Amino acid sequence: MDGPKKVEQVFDVLDRQTVMLPGAAVIEEQIRSIASRIIELLAEEKRLNLMIEQRAKMIPEVDLLQSIPGVGPVYAALIAVEIGDIGRFRDSNHLASYAGVAPRKEESGTSVHKRRKRKGGNRRLKNALMQSSQRSVQCDSLARAYYERKRAEGKKHLQALRALARHRVTVIFAMLNEGTFYEPPVEVDENGRG
Image (cartoon, rainbow, N blue to C red; front, side, top):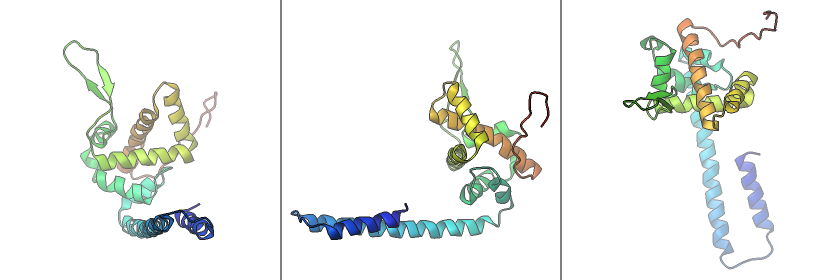
């Protein structure tokens, strides 16, 4: 159920209310005001997303990126714009580091090397990669399997999601370099046949 329908239900319930409590009219007016603002914000979000989609059509990489499960027009445009010219990255590791989804090594004298998440990187790109990865877990069986495998290895939700985002950076790098659409890997049986 979307927001406006929920708001209408709240108004219907308020209109049918038979017991009036002190201050109820003030609270009801506040609810109506907040609900009206929510409806306005939803309409504005819809309008802005439409503008983004229209402008995204002018970026050639957007079509390529939208072929990846979980990457819609908004995230595709954001990823394309934040990456810019793919030629400025020597490999997918460089791109992953730029995006802030590559783990970093912590070294200090004789201490044990630890792998920790990066706090830096391009935050807008990282957010687009993480959010589209979250969406892909819901709509793509391959992404879901990768995520579940990382969870089985003991990673927490965000760690597994970051690992999936890092994995997708490798795919994005190859796609943008070659100018090709996403193709899911062919599953091979035990005899090596696809």
